[in-house]
Image (cartoon, rainbow, N blue to C red; front, side, top):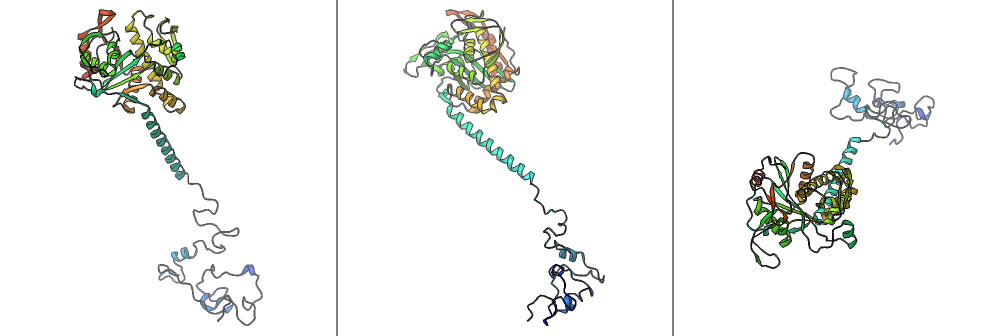
Length: 438
C-alpha cells in the first residue's frame, strides 16, 4: 500500500511527476486545491491520477444539499458549491489567515475585535443601579434605627373622628437633654430641669396644598380631665395655658388637649429639643434668613441685625426663641418660627443635601438622634412632613397663627372661636383655607 503523498510514482523518480524538480514552495496543497471539471494542467483532476499520474483518489464527498454542477447546465458550478469550498479557504489562502493569507470573509476582520460598547454600558448601568439601591437600603435602615419612637398616640383618650388629609403636631421643646454645661451657656438655654414646649404647630397635608398653623404657647385653653401616666391619679379638667398640658403629663396630654380644643385628630407627632435644633442647622451649613428687624435679646442670646444673612445653629436657636425683643410678643415669635422652619426645610430637602453623603449623613444624624416621634411614624411620613414644609416656604402652601381675639387671664391669648371653627372645618374636610393672619 502506497503511504506517500499523491504524485509519488514509487519508482524513484521525482515525486512531482515526469517533469523536472519543482520547488517546495510551489507545491500544490491537496486540501485547498479546487477540483476542476475537465482536464487541467495537472491531468484529469483527482479521478484521473492527476499530480503526476499517481494512484486514483476519490473526490471528497459534498453535503447532500450541494452539487458540483447546476442541474441541466453543463460545466457550471452551483452557488452552494462555491460557498462550501470558499468558506475561508479560497485559492491563495491558507486557513483564512496568516501574514501571506488572503482577504478575510466579508464583513469580518482579522484584527482585534471591536469593543462591545452596548454590552459594557448595560453592565455599567446595572452595576450603578445595584450600588445605589444597596446604599439607599442601607441608609434607610440606618436612619430608621435612629428614630426615637417614644410617643404612643393609642393611649390618647376621647379622640375625634379622623378627617381628610394628614395632621402633624410639631413641637419644639426646651429639653436640654445631651447638652453639656458649656452648651447650655453658649446657647443661653439655662439649666431648668425637665422640658416644656417652646413652640407648637399643626401641619396639615392634603390635596389642596399644605397648611401650617402655629399655636401660641400662651393660648388660653381647656385641659381635659386625664389620668397621670406615671402617678395613676385622676386629674380634673381645668383652664390654663396650652404649654401647661405638656408640662403636666407630656406629649399624650398635649395631643389630647389640642384635639379637645380644635376637633382635629392628630395623626403624627414630632418633637425636637434645643440641642438637636442647633445641630441640624450647623449640619446643613447654616440657614439663610431675612431678619425683619434688629433683634437684641439677652434672655435668648439673640444679637441680630435687620436684613438677609446666614444663621448658624446658635443664632438660629436664639432667633426662634426671641419674644421679649418683639413688639407682638408671642404672636410675632410664632411667625418667625414658621418662617425659619420653612427655610430650614427648604434648604435641607434639596439635591445638594440629599445627594451629598457628606451633608446628608451629618444632617440626618444630628436631627434623628434628638427627634422624638410617635410609634407609627415612618421615615416616609417624616420625609413627607419636611417636603410639605418646603412647599410652604416655596409659596405652594399657607402658614398662619391660630386666630385670636384678645387677652385672657394670666397674660394668655384667647382664641377667636368662630374663626377657629371655620379653619378647623376647612382643614378637616381638606378644603382650601380661607382664614388668614390679621
